[in-house]
Length: 92
Image (cartoon, rainbow, N blue to C red; front, side):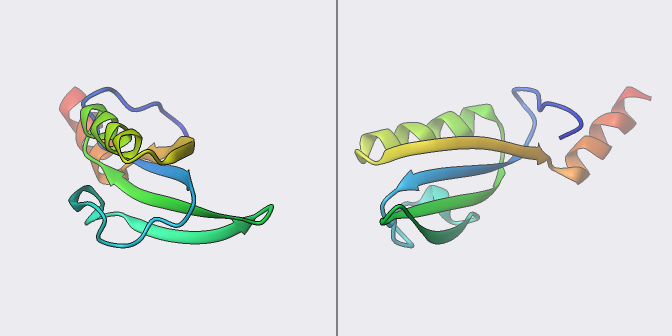
């Protein structure tokens, strides 16, 4: 990752949750992808995709907490390319 996102910038995130989280359990996941894997005999759900900003990310994490799901990790993969291009043009 070349640059850290600002609070108001979209970015791609990877969220890992213990257990299998089924499709359609929440409308916040409509634009996100899910993958499942086994790790030490436990199913891990990995949710990846573009999140609008940090407020949206925190809302997702609160929803995960409210559903009593075990959050394993949150990783910012990168700034969304078209969004960082837009910001660099605005600086000029």
